[in-house]
Length: 279
Image (cartoon, rainbow, N blue to C red; front, side, top):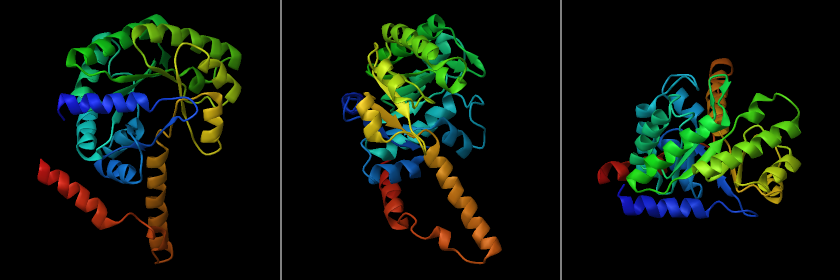
């Protein structure tokens, strides 16, 4: 992808983050899932670290590494035709230069956004430490000439420790530090309390949320002020459920109805053929 196109995608992606009408961001894990998501009308795509890791035969949060993560991003950006944001977990290393190197790798692969976690393993990083790392990621992208969107994830709510109001206050403190370091939004997976989300929205960064069955609707998240709603690994998980159900049906009933209504083989194949021919 040339720099002009990438920056055009970056500007489009940034503009999609807005209150009242948030960015609805499905998560892909390989080129084919990206084609299906793009053809379904998504304005942008994010990768899912869980789906990517599983597709490569490793567990999530097991240090996938910059090279493998960037390889997947490159294959997705080659076929998507829309902005792509990369889930780079915590950057595959604790030091700011580790995160900078990973950011550089995925931006070179065509990403116009990154999702960066503030937890490594079971350890929630100190806010100042994470701010330094985020600043390194921003500087790495700027050296490449790309104004990426940094979605700074905090795991305060996934950890689930302490009263909610205390964690909200801690998240606001992190948001202030992360904003000064160059973050564009605060990502709060695990938080679905709409009043708490609204309190964070009044803070220094726009707020991104992760949805799942039983979570508030898009309209409710929008009313609370969220600018982005993503699905994390949910689409990949649902796809694998279909694989399990189809297998069970075949082995136990000798029938195949679970596979009905699948994506059109020809449509996906034509898209990937076009990409191969351009390459």
